[in-house]
Amino acid sequence: MNLRSLTIAGLVALVSLPAATSAQVGGLPASVVDYSQAVVQEFSFPTYDARGRAGDPAKWRVVQGTGNCCENYLSSSARGRLFDFGGTFLRFSDDLGKTWKEVRSISRLVNGEGALSGAPNGDIVGATWDPYSGDHLLSFKYDAETETWLHQELILKTPFFDRPWFSVIPGPFTFGTIETPYITVLKGGWPSKDLAYYSLDGLNYFLPTEKDTAAATGQEVQKWLKVKPSPALDWIQPNTSTGITPLGNLGALWTARDSFSVGGSELALMSPPNIEWEPFSFPKGDGDGRYLVDSRGRLHRVVPISNDDGDATRFRYEISSDGGRTWSKRVVDLPERHHIEDWDFKVNARLGVAAIGIHAHRNEKEESKEADQDLVYKLDIRSSKSKVMRLYYVGNGDANVGAGLGSNLRFDFATITILPSGHIATSFVDQAHTTPAMAILLGR
Image (cartoon, rainbow, N blue to C red):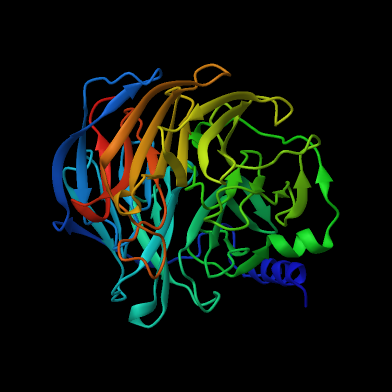
């Protein structure tokens, strides 16, 4: 049985449930408790305008202890709630990081790593994998209609589910007697994350899907993207390492072959009403970079630009209002001697703002003095052409860290989010915070 047949078989089994009229099939209640282990401080870090002129230092609220040893995973809701699911349990704050709550499962976990995303109608969905407590993979969901948190143990998964990623594809979708406002996609595993799992209810994942199978056997589709405006698209943006971008029209674009790749892209498209992936390219080619779609239905793309030494010392920010036919382009140089190691970005059309969080490495004449510096670029995206508003240095830039096992100090990936108030939260690391911390910009 090939993967396509398995997916269809799973759907047939699901829609044959006697009482199935919606995608909600239950879950265990999760508890919400006060979380007091977060260390909250305030710091000031340098700020520069679009011309590189220094301004008054920006004030940041720095929060440590909401993620794990190596990562945060940030998101925010339209109501202003700030989330971090970098560690074992999901944690959230309703006061810009001053105080925190934790969402706990019945299962005892030891040291997990999670991922989450906003979903239509105010739902929140996520999952965490903990190999140290008996190889648990748990999904979590906030059901906005009932204002309750639920969780579920997941059995179907690849054996080593390292570093989950999450994306939400808004609907509504109909499968037989099942109706669901959105589909969620869960990726995980090493060394490849090209196998993913669908859920119709945000809790149960048993429909496998894979991009590479389609790429090897399917006919490549060349066309411009159909993108549908929706207010939800400002709030359901995944971490861009996930590589699956919702398009707002029951479709999605799958871009990343490897979650840590700086360049290169092999694209696949999910087009309604089909939920399977087919190889895709733009008619004019040039599909590199990471993508997001905002509530106005515009495509946003960030593409690193490498120099002759292979270091990405610049990036190109692009906006398309016509499905990729035309792009406005803004090339931005990183500070001297800096190059991109990883990045994430978010866009919010209602606020007219994009924020790009870059974990950069700084070269020095003496290798022992080299270090990493976390940067945040704030862009004005109110028009079809982006403009850099400010560059924020975050942290002291005095720690040389790596990603993955074998690094003495670890910073596995960048993560950033924009709150409805206009505040920006991002991850960073330095010698004062040798496990990744969160910084929340107190000004706007």
